[in-house]
Length: 117
Length: 108
Image (cartoon, rainbow over all chains, first blue to last red; front, side, top):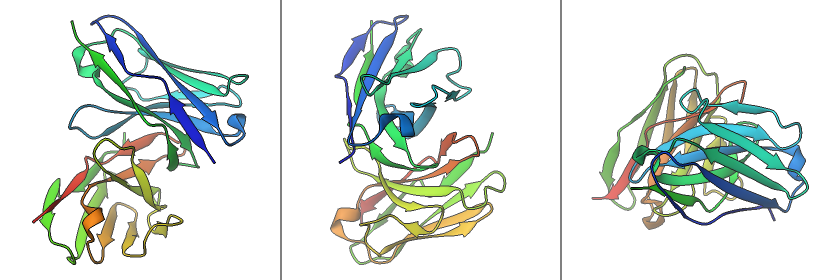
């Protein structure tokens, strides 16, 4: 069965960077794109971007362009999201999610990133 | 950029009620519209894809319709496990995703 397992919670200081991993299993990793979606406490869902695990193509939300970097390691079957210049407003649960031609069936469990001085 | 306006932002309903949520796109999006359910502390769950297609395993009391700019999501008879937050989500030709603001369905 398809599984996406994310790395654990992080606490970071303002201005720092965070890198969250998403290990995929149960399917051919390089066939699909991985989206990253975040959710601030009590707020809605916000799309950050995607990376195609096969050809390394990426697309970023304009809001995060220049501050987020999506990468993947095909040998490890793992996708990564790195967010830099963190501020308090970046405190959120970050989800990875496997694309299925525009919709998402399979999600990671979420990773809480807390930005606090 | 296309904006997705979802309404209402919250509603109160009772078990057995018919519940309808709307999602309006700022421009024509054809049928590139999906619906999710999210419960506290959990990842979203896909219910409807491409405006009206029921995801495998999802109960038939959930339905969606619409095309162009106006979409509706309906729960025909609300069940206790349906109290949750619902999101619409658009995808474009580049697979960029845009979510609506969400609708929290609460107990009346």
